[in-house]
Image (cartoon, rainbow, N blue to C red; front, top):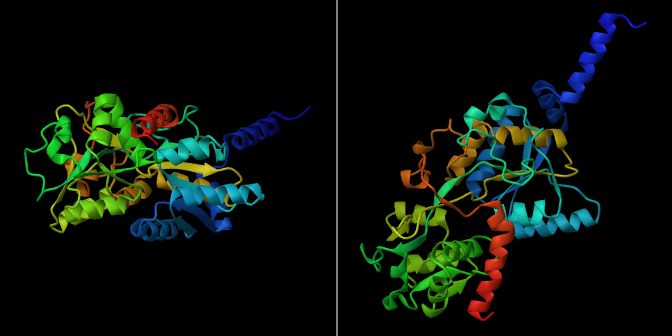
Length: 358
């Protein structure tokens, strides 16, 4: 008969194995792999600061792939069809995470991967829980939640008081002077159109996108350039980071965040985290996910991207304007809502094609 002490030891080992590796074991295993491949926004500051900070903390190299999500998605499909697996972690937007990665089942669950004490401590998160957004609450963790502009104006061409309500956008004097990202394109263009549709109604959307004769583009940089030059002094969409940079440099541009008939909205930007199945560096990937969800990692990422973190222990007011930070108790329209992204936006997009005659 097995001695009691031996039986207790075996049970302890079994329980430890079932619970997964300890933090020290994970760090050691990640260091042996020595590298993690992360895809994220093509932002020079993020590309520089995230790999440097992670390397300084753990001695592990981050190969950072900053590219358009459509390009990364195409690469993933091609590689996986050939049995190749080269990317570990994604930092992406809700559209890509929900309608590509999650829908195509290329993500591994990460809830059990989160083991860093300050990450699993729900008191450190603004909503008092780990901010998973997928239906299973296992695959996609949301780390940004910022108040997003409703539209942008050139302040030389559009004077204070010209747009007191959203319906002032329908004034005939703005006909042919508005630009918008293609409402049928994935991403912010369709998200903005869906927001107008749901908050202000189909008739408003028809008048705005058809009767006002806006110029349509799929390039936010072009929209931003038109805005700065005053070519189209009202932009329903633009490069938010670039507009803010230009505003600080004294250019005549501004973001409009709230109007009486058009409540504020929040967005996540590239603030969704996921881990790919068959990750080539699984331990380093798990370590990186814990770190990017920690105070240090998320603080660096949020500052670099200029986004409000979903943790409550990061001094966001030290790097964000007050208008970008959601106020407690205020009901915002969440443009990154999961159901809105995977179902409602597609229905509205189909209707928009009919309205626009496309």
